[in-house]
Image (cartoon, rainbow, N blue to C red; front, side):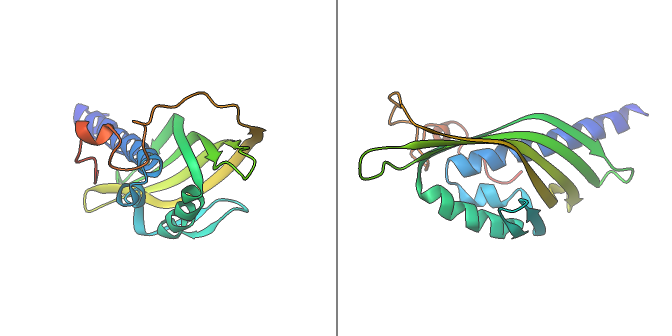
Length: 174
């Protein structure tokens, strides 16, 4: 493998990791454009028993689910990426943890829902941009518990009032 092939491989893997991070940020800050940008327009998603359709359709679906929550947090770890021989295709497996806080019910009770699973993604580089062509989500663990919450600062927001928008306001397209 030549040095230029090594640099191209590293650049591709970093672009894919960045796209995964932008996806989580897009969901958590309710930045729809950023969340949709991880998918190619014809990209598909299979969340095994939860959702099956287009990637943008999944964002539509999850947007409604997240709007009914007080807070949510997505983290991705253990990202393994394999590039295809042509340099324009890749596959990845990423571990994902999602924590959701429901809105308080009439009695003030709240739940924390936690899911741990994996994204199995097929990536394609089109017109210089890496995005998901197909995703399968595998849910490995799930738990629900009554929330005994600590105070969370009001500065943590799900919109453009979050402090992160002051730091890198152009976190849009990859």
